[in-house]
Image (cartoon, rainbow, N blue to C red; front, side, top):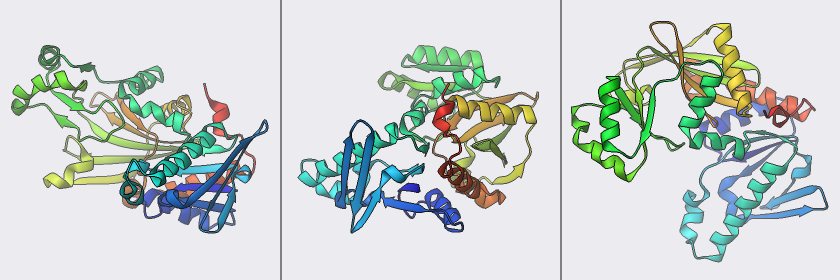
Amino acid sequence: MIFLWGLPGDSPFDAVRAALARTSADVALLDQRSLLATDVELTQDPELHMRVAVDGLRIDLDDARAVYLRTYDPRRLPAVSAAGERSAAYAAAMGVEEAMLVWLELTAACVVNRPSDMASNNSKPYQIELARAQGFAVPATLVTTDPDAARRFWTDSGAVIYKSISGVRSVVSRLGEGHVDRLDDVIWCPTQFQQYVPGRDHRVHVVGDAVFASEVLSEADDYRYASRRGEPATLRACTIPDDVAERCVALARSLALPLAGIDLRRAPDGRWFCFEVNPSPGFTYYESHTGQPIAAAIAALLIAADRGAPPWQMLRP
């Protein structure tokens, strides 16, 4: 059985669900919005057993051999938030969420992707060191709360961008004259600065051993938000060198991620820079522009795991 847990209406989640629906796969789905109405039974004797029930639907998770996970912060779900943090309903919902997370960590099923393995996204500096170990070039980087250190890095590096250190999405921006006085604010929050690398952006989605590369044509510092500034961004499928593709697969495996979205930039001198790895990529944005069958590849990976293919967690370094 393939188990899906997430929010119907979320584009990547729906795309994987639709791809599985076109097959004969046995699929069970749990809507994260149903936390308040979900009951769980978690036992260990000594093996782990878990069952969930909601609105008359009962799912025996012992039968799950593959899992696709795309959930959100449960505290932001409208029904959970409305219940209030001090309510019994809120506590029960958090208990269900915690039980699910425990099961995801301990199950022998192939989980795409396991929460503990996705945690690498909470430290971008950690990720780029792993990228360096796989042979990618990485930009000179400074993480600091010292305004003077930030100014020296800017002076030494020339063009510099700043971005979030963690998995919290931020708009990548280049430092300019308007930031001179604002640099004093870094005393309140560790901030990541990187030397600006010119070149062409690429997003590479790794699904198992499959690689889907997209080339991005944009002059924006962050092409994801180019339209907000009236700047065009064109995405198209492309082929990357075999050695770069192999490094992408190796990087995903080093992070134990069956699914990964890897952000690269090819510099004018031919070097391939790696900036970060997204462990829960919104791949439908790229799929819709390029026509690449990424959702179908994820579905195929889940089906293979359900049929007994070696689970990805066995590939942990």
